[in-house]
Image 1 (cartoon, rainbow, N blue to C red):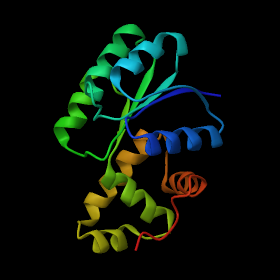
Image 2: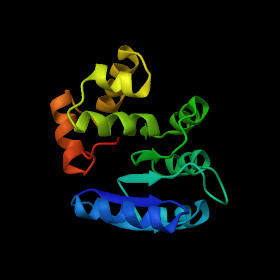
Image 3: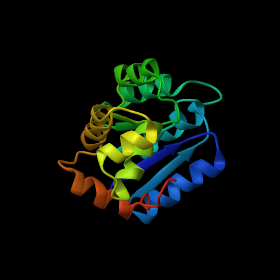
Length: 165
C-alpha cells in the first residue's frame, strides 16, 4: 500500500482524487487545500507519493515541490494539472517532480482505452500519427509501463474507457 498525499484547492477535485486513490488500494495519509497546509502536514504524514496541483492559492505547485524535495528527496511528486504548458512541465520537473500527466495525454489515453488506433486518434484530434505515438510513449513512461496492452488495461481499470466522442 502506497502512502499518498493529495494537494488541490478545489474540494470536489481533491475529494475525487482521494476517493479514486483509496478505491485503488492506496492509503491517503493527508490532504491539503494550499501550499501552507501541504507543508504543515507533509512531515508528519510522510507520504511516499504526493499528487499535487500546480495552481494553488498561496503558492505554486513548483514551489511546494521544491520545499518537499528539500525536506524529503525520496518522496515522489506527481503533478496533476490541466496546464500542459511546456514551461510548467519543465519547472515542475526541475523542482523535483517525478511526473506530469497532461490534459492531452489523458485525452489520448481515454481514446486508447476504447480501442482506437493511433491513426483514428490522430484523425479525430487533427494530429499526426507520430504525435499520437509520442503522447502514448510519454504516458507509458510516466506510468512505468512497457506496452499499449498494459496501458489499456490500466485505463480500463481506472474507468477511462468511455468513448470520448
